[in-house]
Image (cartoon, rainbow, N blue to C red; front, side, top):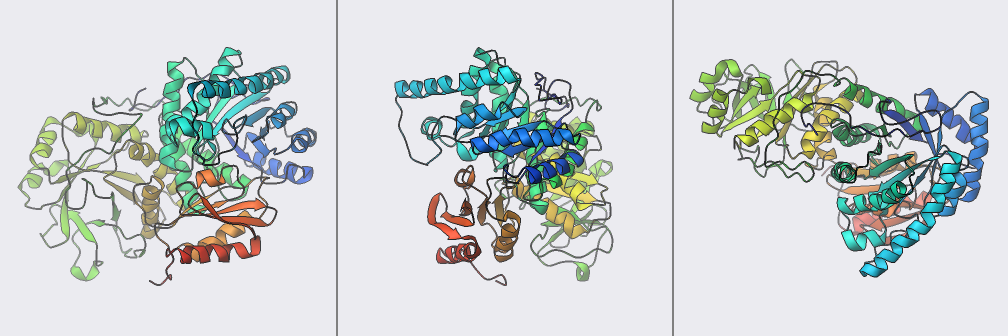
Amino acid sequence: MDLFNYSRRETSVVQIGGVPMGGNHPIRIQSMTNTSTMDTEASVEQAKRIVDAGGEYVRLTTQGIKEAENLKDININLRRDGYMVPLVADVHFNPKVADVAAQYAEKVRINPGNYVDPARTFKKLEYTDEEYSLELLKIRERFIPFLAICKENYTAIRIGVNHGSLSDRIMSRYGDTPEGMVESCMEFLRICVEQHFMNVVISIKASNTVVMVRTVRLLAAAMDKENMNFPLHLGVTEAGDGEDGRIKSALGIGALLADGLGDTIRVSLSEEPEAEIPVARKLVNYIKQRQNHLYIPGIQADNFNYLSPERRRTKAVGNIGGDNLPVVISARMGEEKEIHPQFKPDYIYTGIHIPHTERQEGIQYVFDGDEWKGEPNTWPAFNLEHLELIESSQATIKFLFTPYPLLSEKITSILRNHPEIVVISQTILPNRVGEHRALVHNLMTEGLENPIVFFQHYSENEAENLQIKSAADMGALIMDGFYDGIFLLNQGNIQPEIVDSVAFGILQAGRIRTSKTEYISCPGCGRTLFNLQSTIARVKAATSHLKGLKIGIMGCIVNGPGEMADADYGYVGAGRGKVSLYKGKECIEKNIPEEEAVDKLIALIKANGDYFPANQ
């Protein structure tokens, strides 16, 4: 794979109704209904809204045989009204349901974690090699007849692995790891290949973007080793809503799309399903702009491991690089001086010198090198026209703006002799990721340990567009271990404090710097038996000031306990109008009435000493 030049991974074509996926077909967009699949009218109307928004596949939960059978009526009603969208049945726990659904849906999703294996219970089980082989035989015996039904009905399947629902069998041998997720998928793929069933799509998801990206990278490599080229479905599970959901989804999905991985995507927002489609479309369209871009002559550094990257080694310059958290540099080029107290940048670049009276406390300022006067908490920035100035400057922190194509031997020599220089990587190419990567790999090859801040320049007038584009541009760089700092400059009609919020949101979505409460919330589906959106709003209203706390808000048990494995607290649907509360992996209280559950969650947080008033 070429790290620096964009091209899509070559995959086989999967026929899903009248909308094929993979090969040279466009990256497809999809969503999932949150209606009861037994409510034909509601499901049909919501599916129509998804299609009208631009969705190309619609998935519905089929928790039982009656729901699977009702797909027939939903399909008939949609086609009667001229909607030919392929339907995807989402099956968990009961393989018999998958057998029925394959007769009425164009694609059936099965979850290897609970298709035959018992659902994840967090029990530590031990398997001998013989016992493990017998369990694999059980999968074969149940899975092969299902493939025969799919062949007969021309039904595609999706093997959908979720981090939150790995089986105890996989957990016992591989632990809660990307390698375990990959093997869970490969066990089923090998049977498909053996049975000559190639109408297969794969997804391998997590709410943790780092786990999600690394696992898909590993899966693509594992398939390559075994000469498989199945198309990939991408998504970040339980991404949340609002700004957080958009940034987390764009960062995780965008990191993979940037490397040509992905043939269909679903942006999982805790909002109405049709709201997911425009976000997904913007993300795909933005990545498509990289097609046929100007060639980037990058060379991969020998010590870089794409499948298991570590943070690039740098020498700290002030609070930048080394073991420090990545910094946020913000721009205040005009009169905009408002700074959000929760998202206060580490540095503010103004270019021109500004007097003490106009500076914010607790922030360091960056002025152009010829404007810098050597005052405390101020630092000079230089471009390539002022290399003599940067060498003669006595500042202990210096910033140098440079694009990769101009990274000459002279500049690398200056960087080697001046470890106090922080490189600000800039680019104007459509493939920003490729050019930023090329610069970092050049420095790694040269053995240079100067920290790098990525300068990302936009001209957006809508916050959502900035969230999607900037997160997509930073995703692969963060996952590669290149994260000493981020510098977002937007010259459109968006307030600087909102731009700062996006920058901090990107770092949090990439799991490298926490600035607020993190919510792991699912988008809801027909299994959700309470009002998810209003619940999320109530939980956020009570806890959004608890910086660093992770709270899971999950509609049901399919992925709930698993995806919340690294959450501090969890709120999980247990039945109609009933909720169970978790502390970590442990269920503390079951079947609480929904109207009492939020108050009891707050009480649980307080009882464990993790709550403090909002004004502290």
